[in-house]
Amino acid sequence: MSIYQKDQINEVSIVKTVDGSLRLTVIPMLETLYTCPGIMLKEGNDAVIVEIVRCRINANCPVDVKASIDPANPGSYNIILSSINKPIKINYDSGAIQIWPESGS
Figure 1: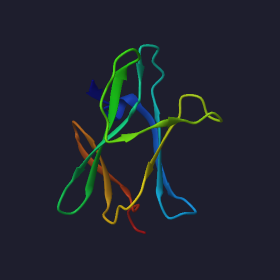
Figure 2: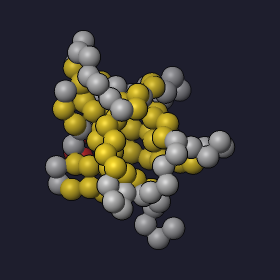
Figure 3: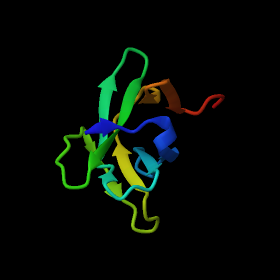
Figure 4: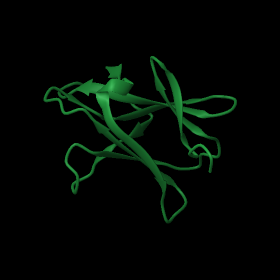
């Protein structure tokens, strides 16, 4: 098990759903031997830190929140986050990048 790095992710987006939860959508680079089973969460003082788990396809990698494959968009994974009242940051080796709320909103 490892964590996806910024150059291994094609797209990350987050939207608020009708029920008030957040849907994190991750599109990692296309690989045949790895998948995204979900994310690990770390609670910080000022934000929730998300690490996107990269796992070999036949391995069992533990995650805090499981991802589901989006059937309408192959290669896209959806992760539902509920009860989060802090900003959300994605953690990479190069540092954490805030994705919710967006800067300036």
